[in-house]
Length: 368
Image (cartoon, rainbow, N blue to C red; front, side, top):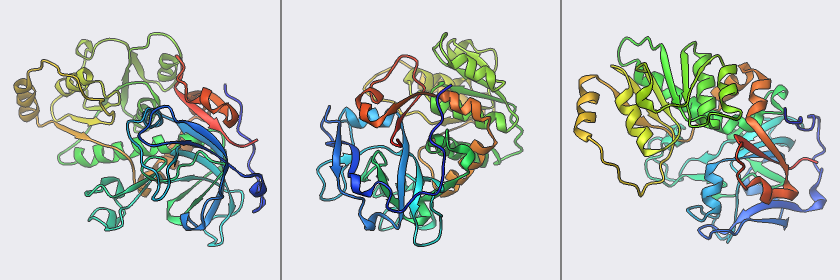
């Protein structure tokens, strides 16, 4: 079991300010430019009134893609982007009184566009229609992989101190909280009594999607390629059933599918596998560039005649972050801690961003 994060306590507003800000950065669009900058300036007050001391940052596939130069956008006027969007920190100061020094907090990743579009205008910035949103550590906003960062109060999510060791999982949990929110909205188009859920992929998103399914009292099945390592045991610990077979070999038709791999063949197979009035949520992102010989007509026939729904889901708004806090608080903390398979100090940042064979969630630690 990984070691605990440092205990929470009231922090001095000036804690660490004279030591310089370390930040993990890249040059967006240029591969292999990952660097730890030791003398970054303090976060600008314009970023938000709440000053936070970083405790940990989770690492996911998005970070690896940004490091590979596939995408990423620095803030206006900057050449480099501070990465890191899965945050956990301790409040240093909040002159608005929204939070207190020592409070555990995470930062909402996406901010609404400045126009705003019809969805951003009502707080549904995860459904932005014009693409002018910004995202910490991804698009136009500095990320959380730095010693200190700032937030506006409405983007600061308070966590219970009991989540001090696992709260870095809040961002990926918010993503699956949104997925389940939309699954349930779609399900209630008719009398809906789902019983069986298939989750494809046993990475962090898949395992958290399975967790939220078990919290709903559903029979959960998780499919992944791994036959060894921690994944089968983590699924079993949820009371779910683990499968390492092709989708078409599963002996049931799920009422709900949460697809988390983005693998094209799996995506197509689960669309065909869902039962009548089934709902398929695509939460994994495909890399593209691969053609598959597939009977699209047969898929269309099945979707239409069985009243099935396929939809995509990404990101989360503030309501989903709050739902994610509830889900993590209800969960077994030991099980959540087992998802954090490596904790790496910021001084060894390159090691943290190098994928290991048994990694589920790697955490970069900032607190001393």
